[in-house]
Image 1 (tube, rainbow, N blue to C red):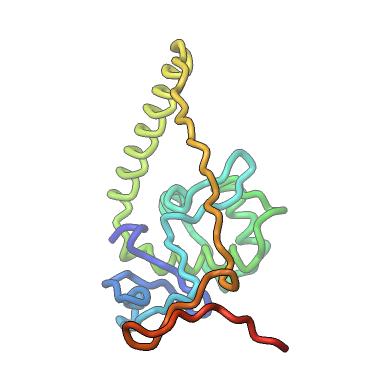
Image 2: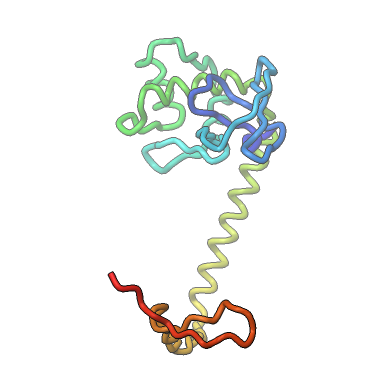
Length: 192
């Protein structure tokens, strides 16, 4: 199981694995209980792969946070004292205590304890290394491209559109609805 397949849904406790898709949303299965249900387009669904946490150096992606928590010993649970959890996270991941709320810290600890037995951390670390190497390669390529002489880009010229003059309905003659060969009727405006 990978982080891109796991979601958190606002208003629903726990984490959920994406099982399938419906035309109105996702079909998910709750991790631990195995209960399946469908989400609607109104539910706020967050994919764990897209989540990051504020640290003092930079925003740290959730996969890196989970790897560091797995490597450390005696990870506190969400029910432990909040000050001790915050202190542990400051030491472990260099958490920015001023910008991270208490409920987010509890949520992180709950998520870690749910995922520590089901998530493949070796694959997570491997995908993290691949992502970092590709990000470095992309930044090197953009630096190389910016140092080359830039060729001027061709700009498409839009043709001027002449507005069509519309004839007001009141000025258009009314067609004769009577059979063929009838007299021509002219348009008469209604008098008020």
